[in-house]
Every structure is written in structure tokens, then in C-alpha cells.
Length: 300
Image (cartoon, rainbow, N blue to C red; front, top):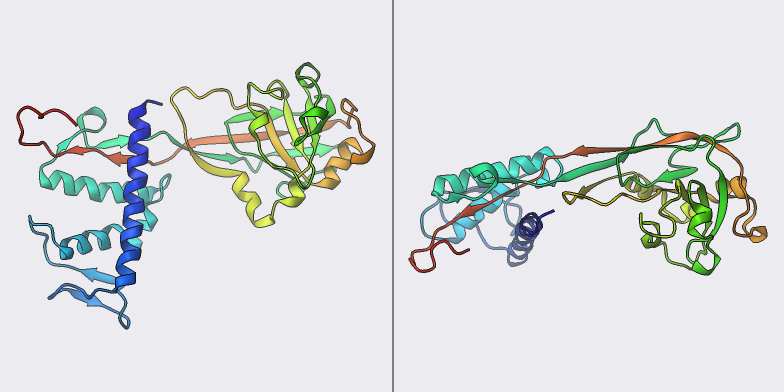
């Protein structure tokens, strides 16, 4: 992704952060609504709904409050990136900068700059079996959503590869290539995934199963199977499919952890893990207010 897109994404995040901070500060100070405004308030807090007077060329507390209430209204749905409400929030900003006469500086001569935000998820059609035992998605295993792909485990050799958080126990890259690598996990260690990139020792494995699902709270597991991501123009290969598994699944695959050695074969599996990727609504509004200095005109 170009630096322009990254800069714009940071700028959009900053706008939302400023809006949240401004809302918090206003709540702490508990100001009253500007004179003449229609508002409904509870005790001394700011009103939940507020309709101000028409805005004026001069910057005023009333105008700022009017715009903030519009932008932070429940109808905007939080303006979350990756949802239709992001388009709704940016549409309001675009209307305002257009009305003010600012020059467009977005894509294709317009005000909007589209961002490559993708929703990543694990398809519910994903299915895995060990012998005749059907594993339960979300309970027995949780694949990490990080790419659009279909990974079949039918006929793929299963091997114990060592402890994820102890590199001295790992198999060689050659011995992991084209296999399902099952890794143990020390409860006191880190859950870092830095070792599982495409260019790591595990990069040529078909999939990596990690015995650490028992330590991940049930409420958090769906978040591992879905999420949104800002993706660069030419992303690198995603690396092997990573699957967190419960201890009982680990034991059924390769046996008790205390009797294992790296390279020990595991039981065969069948099934397919399906990852999905979908482009989601995400954009910035980019507009220019030209300066009056002829020597600096055109510099931004």
C-alpha cells in the first residue's frame, strides 16, 4: 500500500479519536447548551439529543457542538470502519466540505479516498475429523482468519513439531514442509505468532495446530475467526493455516505431551478449513482549503 493510503488511514483514526476525546471532555465539564438551542437534558449532563442553530462562518462552541452531535448521533452507528455506517459518517463530512467550497483531493477527482479494508472470516462450512471423530468448530478447534483460502487436510501427514514457545525443540523446516505440524504449548510462555509467517521455519507447512485453545476464553474465540484488516496493495503470502486446538484434540492427534519427541507421527485427519475475504466499506474524505500566499500555494 502506498504511504498516502497509510497516512490517510491514520488521519481518519485521529479524527475519530479527537471526536471521542472531545465528547469525554465536554461530559466532564458539563457545559450548558448554547442559548436558544433545542435540547433535552438529564440533570446537569449534556443532552442526549441536540439541535443547534444554522452554522455560521465564524468558529463557535455552538457550531462545534452541532457538528459533533450530528457526527456522533446513534444513527451513525459508531461510524465503524468496515460497516455501512462508515459510509454514512463520511458522506456527512463530504457534504459539509463540498458545501464549504473546499477542493476535492480524493480518488478520481472526488472527495472520497477508498481504503482496502477486508473482512476476514472462517466459513461455517469448515469441517475437521480425526478418524471417525467429528471435531466441533469453536470448541475443539479455532482456525485463525487471516486469508482467503481453502486448505484440505485429507491425506496430509501429521507430525509433532515441538513446543511453540521453545525453538530448541522445533523440527527443521524440511521436516515440516507439506505436513500438518502439531505444536505443544507451555502455559507460562508467550502466545506470539511471529514464528508462523510465510518466511519462517514453519512457512512451508500445510497447517500448524497449536495446543493452546484451553487458555483462550470462550467469548474471545469468535474474534479469532473473524475481523477486519487494512491490507497493502501486494500483501505477502499469509503463511500456513494456523489452528488453535483443545488439549483433548492435541492428545488424540499425537498422544500425551510428556511422552513426545519432535518428529513423532500423528493420526490422520480429514476435512477442509475455509477462509473468506470480503472488501468492506471504508473511506476517508480528503479536501483542500487553499492558502492565500502565492508562493506557498500548491504546497500541502
